[in-house]
Amino acid sequence: MKNTPIREYMRQTGKQAREASRVMAKADTALKNRALLAIAAAVRRDAASLLQANEQDLAAARANGLEPALLDRLALTQASIATMAEGLEQIAALPDPVGEITNLKYRPSGIQVGQMRVPLGVIGIIYEARPNVTVDAAGLCIKSGNAAILRGGSEAIHCNRALATRVREGLAAAGLPEAAVQVIETPDRAAVGELITMPEYVDVIVPRGGKGLIERLMRESRVPMIKHLDGICHIYIDDSADTEKALAVAFNAKCQRYGTCNTMETLLVSRRMAPHILPPLAALYRAENVELRCDPIAMQILEGYPCLKAATEEDWQTEYLAPILAIRVVDGLDQAIDHINTWSSQHTDSIITEDYSRALRFLREVDSASVMVNASTRFADGFEYGLGAEIGISNDKLHARGPVGLEGLTSQKYVVLGHGETRK
Image 1 (tube, rainbow, N blue to C red):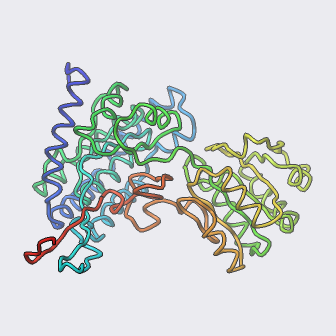
Image 2: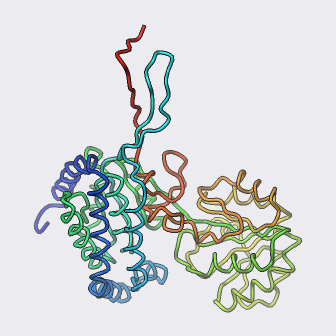
Image 3: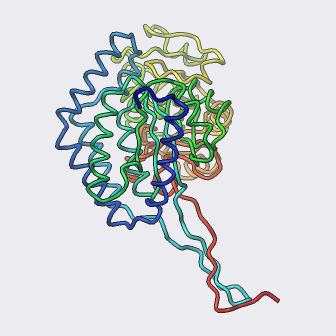
């Protein structure tokens, strides 16, 4: 795009994506799977060079003082590269939703009416410091018959370019248009402004980044979005919780990784369980230097804990993305559900309980995209849900909710099969 004005460059990219989307919409499953497996093979083959490109990005990010949570998202390892390739292979093994006809029923007139799954068209993905998104998004868009325009953060520009090369290689190997997946070459933020205001070329925007980015897109975008703003996730430890399970799950949900949207940010504990579960749980958190922000009851129970602060109302509505945890002691299930439905970002919430009826109430009454029983909130992603990967997580209620995989990247149109019927 050397010397090309941003507006012209983005409109050329959009036009190419629109043309490629028409080819992708009619591509058969075998071709799409061939492309996915070719990309996976290229990623595995070139792991060493991908790590070198990633190290360039990491060195620049450290020099620029990037926050630890963002550095964590930016970093690739041999294991994470293998996971990227495995995700592509999982996507290839999944059923192709495109063209599937469901709910076909005869009407009194004699016609049959059903619904067919079809691609959304062109999907723009905007993300920060997450090179794995380049591969995950490409794979999901290819399999679902869409074209993709990927705008990664400048922090990952070397790695994203390297991954884009492998994606183009895989598309070419399958005889599919390389423009089906385009990575924006410029780090200029004006490119985002153009991408989100091209409804003639882009059908959906998927933002994966910080709150500031998503708030900006919500204000400025002229294209519909699949998004979530915050990841304020909860675990509630019920009266009937198994202590061993509660300790393991509550520790993992906070400490397995701090910088992810499915990390627990608030722990709710029943009044009856609090004196028994909080001290040993605090000992686990202390080993990881987790700061605890507690309500008065938890403060009293944990008196003497070295990293203890009084919680304020602000803590119930904060996504820390850091070794900080808010703790509240509640009277029971009703108060826990009320707290979650008041302060949750409707992302992911979990209950630890051995009481079947309470588990069902929690599943039914907590109004979040993912609701769990006796499991860490860290499981809330497309790979763990068997989607192969995810293009993002949505806490909206229309179209797609939760981790967005292949089905979330398609829509439905009505199809009618007739035998010459005419309406009377």
